[in-house]
Image 1 (spheres, one colour):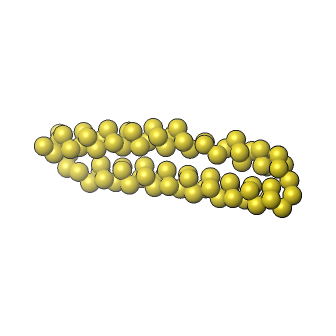
Image 2 (image 1 turned 90 degrees about the vertical axis):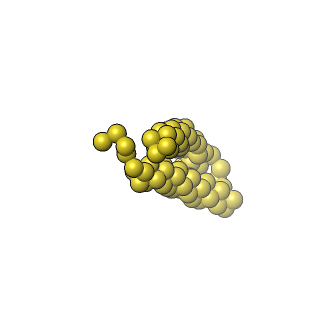
Length: 81
């Protein structure tokens, strides 16, 4: 049963990593546009600041999810050794 649990968790880790990789760049285009002054003025500045903060938060949460899943996998007994 532990081997099955470990294999299932390994699949979960791989899935979370794939999703993280897929979504890591989700706000890049918006951040680049704002850095190139696509929207100026106070409202544009606020939006640019917000989208950069959102990008940092997204990346932090993705990294945490991957790390958490990897820690869980590492904590499971490995019956193959």
